[in-house]
Image (cartoon, rainbow, N blue to C red):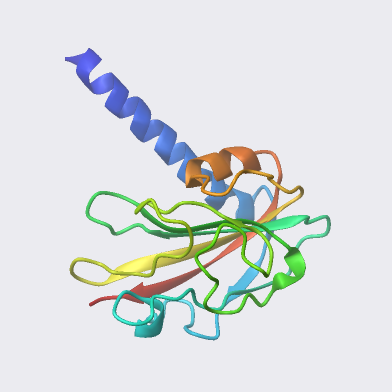
Length: 182
C-alpha cells in the first residue's frame, strides 16, 4: 500500500516546495516589492473586462521597490481555489524591469512588443487566461518576481520550468490578489 501512495506523497511534497519558493523569496530571501493594478485593489473584485465574462484581457500591473540588480521581471497568476488544485492563468517572464506599469491587454503572443516571453497556462495556451471559476468566488494571485538574470527560456515554458530557472536568482517579490465569481 505504501508503494501506491509514495508517488502521490512525493508529488505533493514537490508541489508544496515549489509553491513555498515564491512565498519565501519576498520575506526572507529578498526584498518585498509593491504590486498594484489600476483595475482592482488588493483583495478587490476583478472587473469582468479581465475575465471570461468580458474581453478576457490581461489587467494592468505595476511594480515598485524593484531591488537593485534586477535584470528581469516574472509574473505568474494562479487560482488557488480551483477544483482540481492550483490553476495557472498566466506565465510571463524576462519582462524588462522598466516596463512597469505593464499596460492592460498584453497580446497572447510568444514575445509581446513590451518585452518578455510568455509561457503556457494550464489550458495549454500562450498568454493570459482570465478568471472563469466554475462556481463560487475564487482568488487570483498575481505574483511578481525580481530576478537577477534573464531566464532565456523558450516561449511556452511552464510555471514549473520558470520557477526552477529562477531558483537562486530571486532578488524580491510581491503579490496582488483579486477575486472573481461568475
